[in-house]
Length: 305
Image (tube, rainbow, N blue to C red; front, side, top):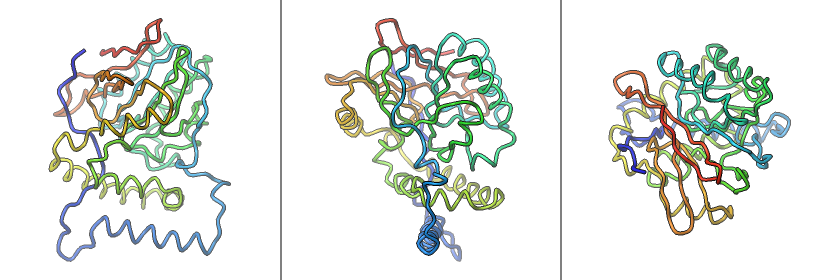
């Protein structure tokens, strides 16, 4: 199997020089989390009562018999072709499998389970699918990292912690979104550490939707600027980090998304399979979408459609 043409992944924030007279976005995030930590220290809020997404998600999952795995659809109202492709997938492909697994970035952005009425049609499709008795398992990505239990419960899905070990056709597999292994992208890793902090998430989700939108707009603007300045290899996974994760988990198969580089990487001790991203809209629209499924012998395969 040959690797598709490399495309940049979507780390969120880098190190753009600040505009004169304006506090840099990274500094505002730093000040924000520090003030939040002081607030929670005073209030002694018990986060376990209302766990933010970083503390939610299952770490133990019932075995999967024959799943179809997708990721990086980046659904949004501005991507009608991708949405229609997802509708077709849910009607014609997903029903062939007893389990549907979504490993992050189902949505192009997600500001909280209370913030996206426009996502109701997508949620209705997933809920209808789960109502047939099929399992739906969802993992947050780097664009929808605050996808939480509220969303999962609304559609009848199982929320997964990232990463998680799951048995598939009798074989232990490490499932992940994949962004945590892009260690050469140091700017993004700093951002990821901050935004995956449960205190930071709890504070952000207490803000109004309008306030969250403003933070997201600036983060997206910074992301696009920064991404254009990075080499593609910087935004790919570090193979040694994946190998170490596989060894620690006791698996010989890793499946992830995020990098938008669908391929099978086979090594002596393990295999790393990258899920196809979906790209059908805009100037980057290449009519590309796909999934990972499994042969009867438990070996993965990439399917493009």
